[in-house]
Image (cartoon, rainbow over all chains, first blue to last red; front, side):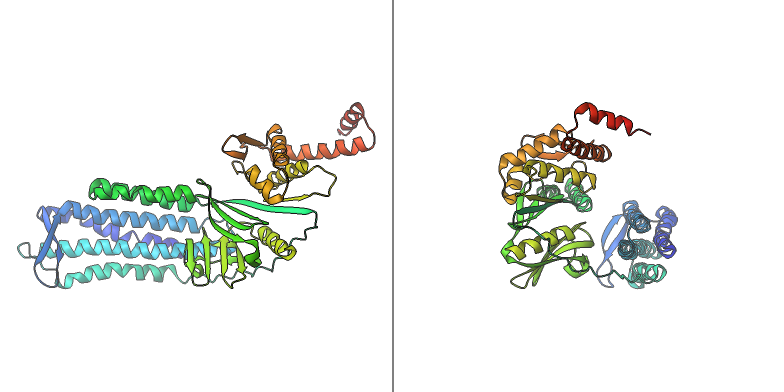
Length: 314
Length: 117
């Protein structure tokens, strides 16, 4: 845990380098060379202060992201398995952030020193190494953060069928919420809107799409009953996945590792598909055609038992 | 949450459905703001009459546990009180047993008063 915080702090070192070299701007012309093709003369120029600021902001955002990731990983109220999973995710974010932060500082140092060395004809040449060195800062963070803890999650015992008397009827219904997904969609829309405002007006057309997707999928109702399993997009009330009962062979509760199911969101892989809103427990259906379907939820044993009971009576 | 009813049981179906929702709130499976299945859908999957489900939801609304809004369905109220609900459930059991023993309202109240330490 301490090592993760240290790695997150290390993400700030390149930011310090960029900030500390702010004085170079006084010695540099108003516009500096920022693009080269091969080893020839420069073929692209930018405003010196604007370029410096962009690299500083890239570093700052990376630094904040790394600290936020470390903070979520060290929240102590989670289950041991959840904490290990969070640690692994935070470690990835910190390493990526260190690479971006280092790369941004490297770009600034490389371009600024190129112009400082020869203002008349700046050449990048070997200075490209500063950028490579900066990117390699991710490697340093990787070493500092240490190895990923092993995930040792006990296997879920099989789910017994719910014993339903012939006169009994049962149905399961729950609502899945994903604030994280909604937040991501909202952020994507915001970024698209800002980009549209600043440079690419055509993006106005695309900006609301993630927001709409977020609104539709922020709440998903999952029902298991005599019809089978259904997933209904909350806001619009549109069923987007139906698995009839007679297609279900067995249902079980299992650990859903997003890496094994192709990531987050609605995933389709050969032979299986899944709705993965987070890592952790989920309901897994084994279908008669040999395929599998999984959906993450807090209490997968209840719908699994019900579906096993319903298929047994069917 | 799981809705489970027995059409052969003596307890009316609407009461059974209402009891399941109360249990869901007491166990924390139904949080404030959580939406209950649409009455029509629940009636269909449980194979009971629509009016049975509507009666159950009506009971829960009268107990201030859920809100019923036209077009928006049934939603667990933000102030649905799980602790008070548990007391109400105990009281319901108590009244049922007292009625079975043939006690009147005055006698029941006396027993409750006498239960104070």
